[in-house]
Image (cartoon, rainbow, N blue to C red):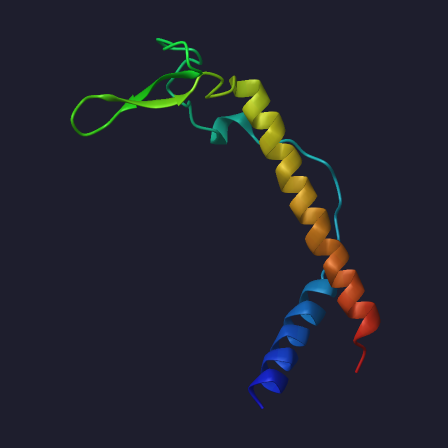
Length: 103
C-alpha cells in the first residue's frame, strides 16, 4: 500500500513538472554568486604534493592538495558544466517516466 501511495505521489509530481513549459537555454553561473575561495593554489608546498590550506581552530594550517583551490574561472566553468549535466539527467528521467508509465 505504501508503494502505491508513493508511486502515485511521485507520478503526480512528475506530471505537474512536465506540464510546465520547458525553457532550455544554456546560461553560465553568475560570477557574483560565487564566493572568493580565499586561498592561492600552491601555498607553502611540502614537496609531497600537499600545501597549506585554511588554519584550523589551533591556528595550524590544514594540508590540502597543491592544485587546490582552482582559479575562479575554472571553478565557475566546472560548476556550470556540473549544473547542466544534472539538469539534463533529471529532464531525461522525467521524459522516460512520462513515456513509460502512462495511466
